[in-house]
Length: 115
Image 1 (cartoon, one colour):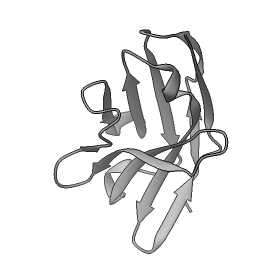
Image 2 (tube, helix red, strand yellow):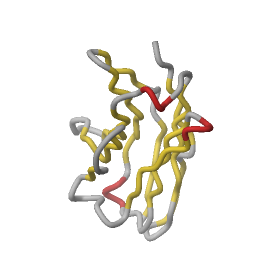
Image 3 (cartoon, helix red, strand yellow):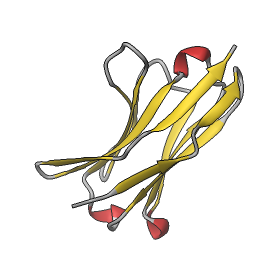
């Protein structure tokens, strides 16, 4: 079972940047896809970015050009660099590991963007 721990959330003004980290308990190299999701109050959880083991990274239209997902395999860590943040980016951000028929979730980290 893969354990995921997110960090890096916080309060930032609009236009600012944050970098979220997701540390995995196992070798990320063997995980099929790493995702970042977010859930705003009263809204459904939505996919923000995906970093498959093979293939191109995928971004939601709402964050494309502002967010970048990357992996440091040596540290078993996935990052989400978020630039030019907007108030509508306010949400709890979750890391997800897709491995075969299993999905593993972190506990989430709060991102709040003030206007």
